[in-house]
Amino acid sequence: MILVLVKVDFSTGYRSGNINPRKNTFLPVAADWQNLQDGYEIRICETAAAVDHIRALIDSGVEGLTLLETDAELDAALDQYIYVGEKARTRYQTADPALAIEFVRQAGIDLTPLQGERDPEAWARHLYDAGVPGVMRHEPRRIRAADVRERRERIERQRAQANAAREQIKAKRRYNTLGNNTERNPEP
Image (cartoon, rainbow, N blue to C red; front, side):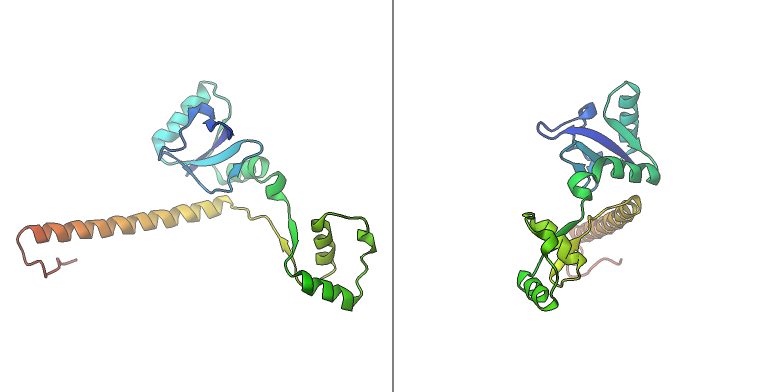
């Protein structure tokens, strides 16, 4: 499985090398493999011809394309280009404010370090660190190369099952159109 890191202008939709995102040869991996602020995305090169096309573009001097041929290259590109800024940040949220307030009252937790703080996330972080129930911590979800490989294998299995089912339906239709008994099913 070979992937390509593509520089994208999301305001116009233009991708380096004029890559067409609607072609089946350059499939998106996951919606969160796009960095909308800096303009990068990672796509799968579905065919050998797609890989050759990207290599030809890179050899001709097109900027903004990088082939990711190993798991280490993919994971490094994810860390450098995709999981940055907001996507890399751990978030805190007060899911049940009433429970949190009551716990703070009963436990006598000191809130003086937060005087003058207007950011609700800073409050939630302080309460989470104090062990207050009803406050949640959200770690960023990071998909890695192994996850992609597993997903691709699952998709290939599903495609094979769908193709086998289509072939069975075709065989059944052929059997029925030959004038045979339509009540009988062909042998699998």
